[in-house]
Amino acid sequence: MKKPTLTLALTLGLATALALPALAQAREVTFTTELKDYGGDEAYMALYLTDTSGQYQDTLWIAGEKSKYYKHLRDWARGSGQRSREYDGLTGASLGSGRSRNITLEIADELIDAGYEVRVDTAVEDRRDNRADAVIPLTTEGAGQPVSGRGYVKSFRYTF
Image (cartoon, rainbow, N blue to C red; front, side):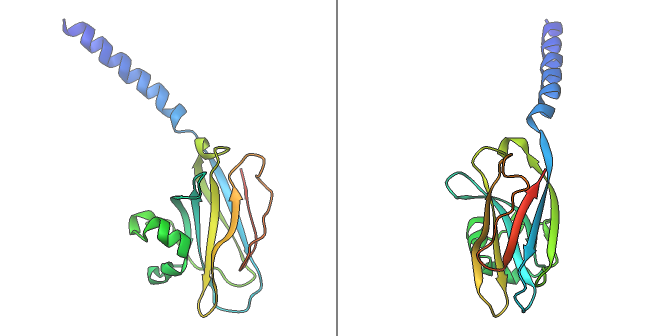
C-alpha cells in the first residue's frame, strides 16, 4: 500500500521540478534613464511597475540612498507605502543633471506584453517633483524605443 503513495509522491515531485523552471522564465532587461541638464542637485528616481489599470505592482529600482526623501517620489510612495521591504536591496546613488544610468534586472516573461507599464518618478531638492515623469509600456515591440520625460527625464528606454 505504501508503494503507490511513494510512486505518486515521486511523480508529483518530478512533475513539479520540471514545471517550475517553465513558470519562472525571466529575461534580462536593461533600463536606461538619461536626465536633462537642469542645473541643480542630483535627482532621486523610482522605477516601478504598474498593472493595466495603472495601479502600483512592484518596485524595480530606487536612485537615492536617503529614504527620508522617498516621499517626494509621490506616486511610487503612495503605491509602495514606502515600506522598506518594497525597496530593500533595490537602491543606488542619486543621478546628476545630464547623466544617464543603466539598470539591468530580471523581469518575468509573463509581465511582458501583458499590459504592464514601467514608470519613473523623479524629485530634486528645492525643485519640482515629477509624478510619472516617464511612462513606457513593457512590450516586445517597445524594446529599444525611447520615450521623453515630462520633467527631469530626457529619455527612458529598455532593451532585452
